[in-house]
Image (cartoon, rainbow, N blue to C red; front, side):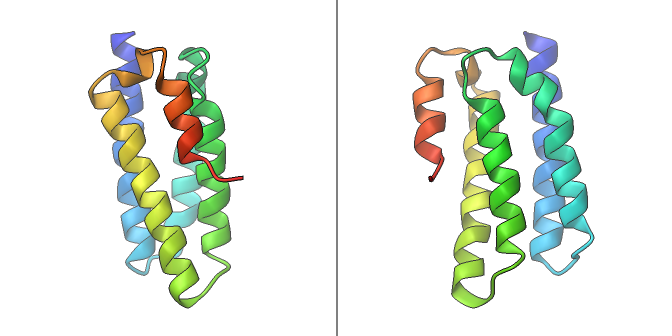
Length: 112
């Protein structure tokens, strides 16, 4: 599992960097962010029953939707993406994705 966690951490760092650049005014970084999330799917799927693949999918959807909003709504959605990235990164850093309760916590991050 260590190589998977390391790959996940590296992917999350790249995604976070892409997201920050996007929010700071580099619109081309949204495509990079989306691509990074897609590249992380195989690692996420390796953590069976973690809910991580669905969380990454929702993160991608919210990021796309945020780009189509303006003002305060966009800011709120941008913060949602950033906080979810931090949640996943913290889980990977502390190996929480390996714990049985991670799926429930990941589901709590999702909004239907």
